[in-house]
Image (cartoon, rainbow, N blue to C red; front, side, top):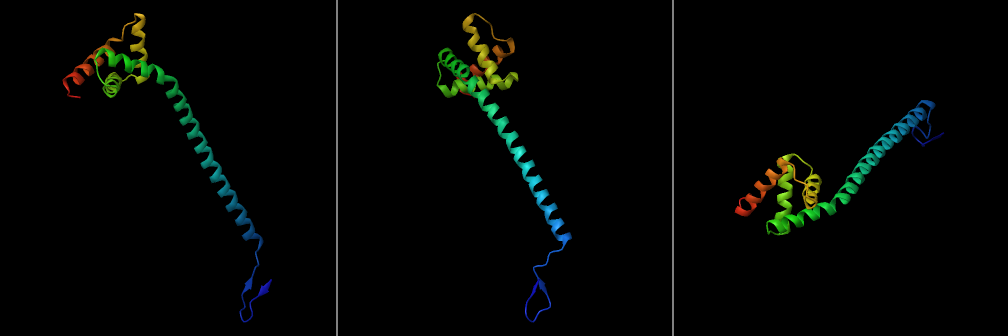
Length: 130
């Protein structure tokens, strides 16, 4: 221990209680960091899974968009809007709407609610009210 000349204050002394509080604080900080990192890893894993799913479904969605462009004659953006509207109005995932549409090339029929929603979307986009 050293004292500053002219002052009665002691500099550099740390008792056992202060050292114990420091260890607890460092332990809590490490625990918080681990919890934060674990949450970040879980979020990144979920995002990665979603991106992989999107990449896997992209080709069928692009095929469906091309089919809409051929059926309606319209630009790619309008075809996308038709597919999205159909998906939203039927509460069906976009990739599932696209899969059903592409399956019509194998003589399968669209689900009635998808067919009805898609026809309505076509009409809205043809009339320009979309």
